[in-house]
Image 1 (spheres, rainbow, N blue to C red):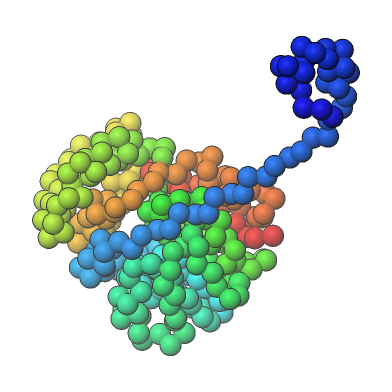
Image 2 (cartoon, rainbow, N blue to C red):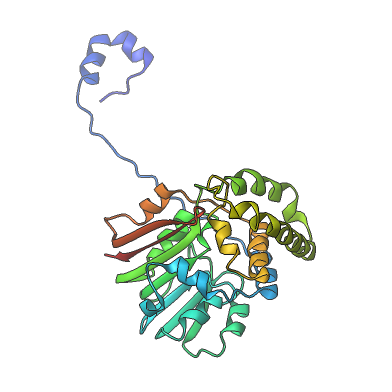
Amino acid sequence: MPRITARYLENNFLEAIFYLKQPVEAKVYYQPMPEAPVQPKQNDWNFQWENFYDDSLFLFKEWIFPHTLETFRGKSVVDCGCGGGQHINFVAPFARRIIGIDLNTTAIAREHTEQHSIVSFVEGDLASVSLPEQHDVVYCIGVLQHTTNPDATFANIKKMVASGGRLMIWCYSKEGNWPNWLILEPLKRCFILKLPKRALLYLATALTALLYPVIYTLYLLPLRFLPYYEYFGNWRKLSFGRNRLNVFDKLNAPITNFITRVQVERWFNQAEFSDIFIDQYKGVSWRASGVKL
C-alpha cells in the first residue's frame, strides 16, 4: 500500500480511496508494566525500633483475626516487614520456621529474637525481594501502607505464598481516617518530619498525654459519630507506653498510604484466592486474608 500523503491524495484521489477502504491488519503494542519503584532505606524505622518494643499480643491477635496463633503451628512462615521482631516472638513458639524480611531493621529484629533458632532474616525491599521457595503462611502487619507502592508490594509478597498457603495483612484504611490523611499528613510533610527524632519523641509523649482526658470523658459518651470512636476504645485497653508508640509511629512514618476497600478487594480477588476475609477493624484499618489458589 502506498503512503497516503496530502500530495498523493491531490494527484491520485480515486486510487487513494480504494486503498483506504482496504482492511488493515491490527497491530497491538504491549507497554511493559513499570517496575516497582525501589524503596529507599529509612533510618526513621531504626530510631523507632531502637526506642520502642511492641509487646501487645492482644493487638496482634486482633489483626490476624479470624485466624489464631494455632494457624502458625508447624508451618513455614514469612513476616513481611518484621520491624523490631516483636511479631516473630509471638509466632515462633508455634511455627516450624520463620523468615523475617525488612529493609531497615533486620539487625534489631535479630537481636530481639535471638532466643529462637528457627528464625532467619532477609534484608530487602518487599516490592522486589525474592525468596528461593514459597511458604505456608505469609503475613504483613502494619507495613503495606508505609511502602512506596502498596500494589507492587502486595503483588510481590503474594509470590511468597505456596498454593494452599495463607496470606494475611493488616493496613490503614482510607475510609474512616480523614483526620490522618487530610490534616496530619500535610503537617508531617511541612513540619513534623523535619524535627529531630528526639524532639519527635517528646512531641509524641505530650500528644499522648493530652489525648487521655478526651478519651476518658468525651469518648465514653455514646457519640459514635466522633472520628476514631471505635479506635479509641483500644486505647483504654493498652498501656501509656503502647499508646505513645502508636502516636510516634504515625508522626514518624516517612511514607503513609491509606488503602481503600476496593484496593483490598482487588488484592484478594476470587481468581487467585479462596476463603477470603476482609473486615474494617475499629473503623480505621483493614484486616484481610485468603488462601492462595
